[in-house]
Image (cartoon, rainbow, N blue to C red; front, side, top):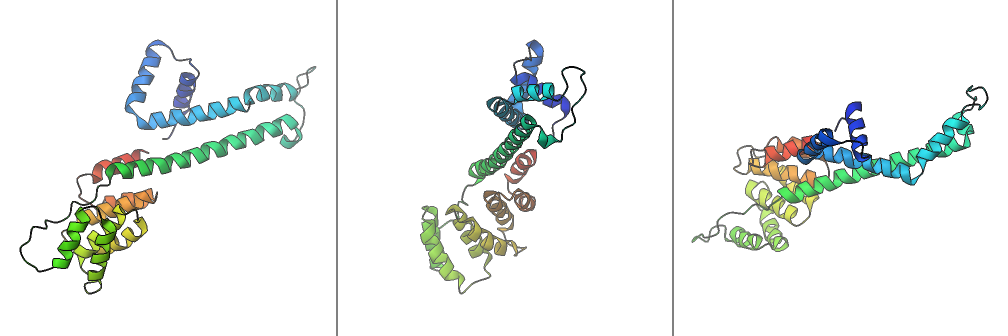
Length: 245
């Protein structure tokens, strides 16, 4: 979230208990509907807490008083690192920056994983009530897949893939099964093969699951790229959530 100086000051005043009445009510109403604002408040709260814990407020006051001569108010000439207290203040500030940076990266990962968990549902699979014995091995594996036994289904499908390496249906379901089995790198390989078939009935869904696989790997840019190629009913909503972060 790009934060203006005005918004920064509003958040700071809110966290310090300086917003009152209508202004406070309005800010809290905005908080209730904006995840980006809630995230910005949380980040600034961590900065303030870190400053308080490091006693930087007191340190900065001392820096200010020592930076000037008590008698004539003229600024003393120091390099930054020649001022002992300023040196420690800067070191503490850098520590805070690393803390917030690490927190932001962690939060990004958490957000991506939370979104993945919210949106990923294995493909329900194909109907298996077939009277014919044609492709029996494929549909036998489909029954296993629907039962949630992805590893066993993969073993059967990958055996069939040896004789049909370019089959879009096999590549698609193998990719989804790998993703359901927490194997996102393998899923990406097979789903990319599935998306190579432009006339495949699974093309849109293959792009959707490929986007989810990259989301699971915290690659937001590629996740959005492939989700935008999909016409899956959930793609647009997920893209919007990713772009709001």
